[in-house]
Length: 303
Image (cartoon, rainbow, N blue to C red; front, side, top):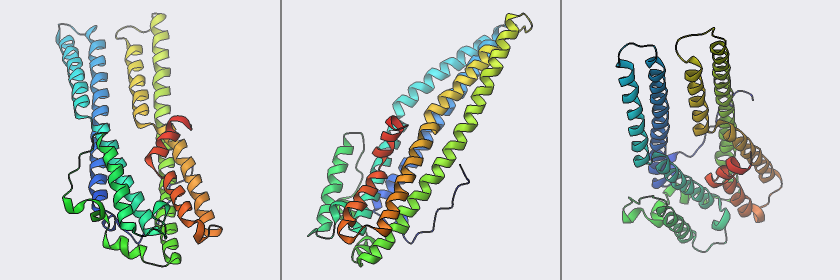
């Protein structure tokens, strides 16, 4: 893949989107960082415990054995702590809320999906759909911390109302530039970054596996004495594979590439052939392509 393309500048900022989007986006990023940090720490401590256990055979006394026992105990404690904190679950539910708000906001501004131009009371429809989806997400652990004034129509900002009131041509240009083009470039950049990370980690784990194989062969031929380097290198390779599984670099590369291609196709069609009569349906389909549920489906079944 080529170098990442800069994301085009936009005329809307996060402050123009629903307040709950900004809160949920920040919380999702924080919990995502916590989840990855917890897994990384867990794997590192487990690798250190394995190293201490391997060196126990060579060390005199019981110092390394005690260190290994303490590190294995710490590994168990970290696993229990990670399970209780549920950072990954909190990250995913807050990300779902943030993307829900963002998608509904764009449908509202662009007259897309169920918020098309013929809706009598778009504010009420926006509020109804929002609260219905948020009610479903509460079952997944999301906690509503909003004030009563921030519920329903309280999530519609003045900028959103101003954009909805504009002409079809103005709304069309805004959506094509600030939503579709921006997201197309975002998915392209993410696919490129995930591809580089997947290649880098695959090289690391392959090298560690080869070193482990070489160490095992040398030890079998009595050419390598001392510590069990094969076991240690194998553990390091396993940790690398586990980290790749957590990050899902490979599946995300394919999923983001497919979404980027679909969005570019949609953008071209909406620029050239989609008329005002078919605009709402086209916007709804584009928003479906950008939904976390669609990305997750591609990661699981489309790669």
